[in-house]
Length: 568
Image (tube, rainbow, N blue to C red; front, side):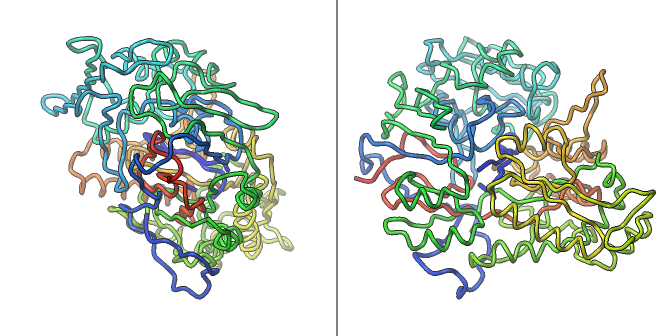
């Protein structure tokens, strides 16, 4: 499965996602009353104290593909597969509980960061004196400094996924010694805990070439976590990490984690055969109905900050007119799509009407307006007004047919179902949808990132920081001196200075209620521009072996990889 992740940034997930009451031990869900999204402060990971977890053993973790780049901060690296692998090896200086509340990590910090807001916003970190990279280099203020330099967007040689937050920093300097880091912001940045996690070392951030290409083939030796990289086998499609004997924190319970690439539609069979230890079901009703019948397997559920959506390419010749995008949006019944995907799971099939906040998050508000309301008659009238007249079954304008290239990743059943539903709906208003299924490994690199699509569908996996982590997706695209597009994660290629200012103002606002108000104003503009259409909050349904501890549907929380293992 492929996803785009967002921590300080959003990240894409190809398959349908990334907390709450269990779905139960059996049954199809058809006879159950539709359940609302789980609460945002609950998850299900079979939490166990470390003394109840076996020492040793292996966890086999399914992936949808081998990552294109193991640098999470690179444009090609901000994906769920990279997160799953690299979080076992890289420093998370701030972690989050099930409610999304930030907690400083004593493995990397000697104490809680000190924050001052007057006269300037300054955050001071004290690094744990034991913290070091696996090559023996101490972790110092320079790692923070070069992390910022690589990520702040000023040096275009670094191909970053986002500069969110880092572009707001004025300086990162040495404090009283090498272990003290002083971060000074140009203006207030409310979500400062989202920064510097995962922290990458100065040694790999000083040189843009190493930043861009050094992590492409495999993780480098300069990691610092409870696990370390052992091997990658691109023939067998596996990545293996093992317990790190240089780790100064709690010893990892597992001997090793083997990440195994398996086609998303085949993962449920692999779980049934005992080849893997869990599977992310998402909104796949067939997989859910099978999983609840497996002996020794349980369903773990959470309602994390993750959602399905259609990204719409505003640079497409047939979609560059916002009036056309608005009309087409009105021809798509998002409620019907949500019902088709969520209904069989016994979940409330309501469409998601916000690009920033999830339905179970504080701040959620329906900003979809007329664009988000299914009205085929208005859709037809809008296309007529835009000059697209019906010629047989398909509309035309100046000899061009209104045809949409809808690109989906092969092997993802939910993407196929969502695209086919849309194909049928838009045919009713004279828009022809051509569905193009492409290899999952090529989906982002060859299609989404270069804009080789009109419509596409995937999931955004979120963070506990919904406002700041969203900016890079919706920020106005810029062009460099060569006329090439610089858009970070804005795959729709549309935005505005007004929208950027709303995000900046919201990110600088320390009053939460005011920040939410500004964010919802930004969301209304996103709907008006038809940047993308949110579909539904993606359910986090994990079918896991019952004995698997401290793993499962995590919601807003971060996993502690050193605590994962098997119940004694």
